[in-house]
Image 1 (cartoon, rainbow, N blue to C red):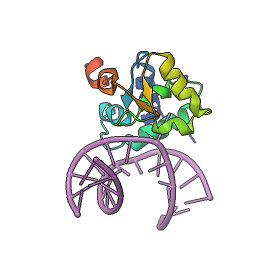
Image 2 (spheres, rainbow, N blue to C red; image 1 turned 135 degrees about the horizontal axis):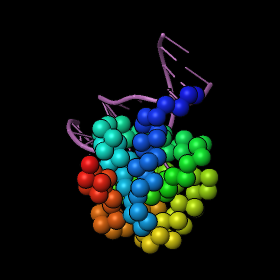
Image 3 (tube, rainbow, N blue to C red; image 1 turned 90 degrees about the horizontal axis):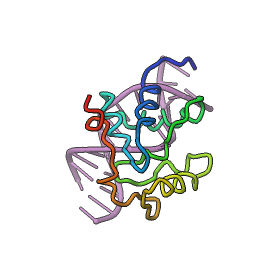
Length: 112
DNA sequence: ACAATGACTGAAT
DNA sequence: AATTCAGCCATTG
């Protein structure tokens, strides 16, 4: 499983840039990378993120609805909610409240 | 090499 | 509004 600097690294990097108390969606990242339809690959990249020596705040990445779909894949699902709440993100049944305001759009924040 | 799967999303029904 | 379908492409059996 050779590691080419491609989707993985890019996704990891973008996710790492997410400020505390902010969240983003897979689609937003994928779109920023130029693959608006490859949101799934972003999720896979996250899964790999646990395997690399790269601290990636995957807990700040949720689906387009602000739902913590990936919480179950964490080493400890509760960790995701806890981390988010700890950073000031309001959660409700694994869903991010005020998602629209907490949403961190790389295409805008980074403004290319 | 082929088939199935997956932390998604948007459109269609 | 809820469910289903199709596209996306890397990883795995």
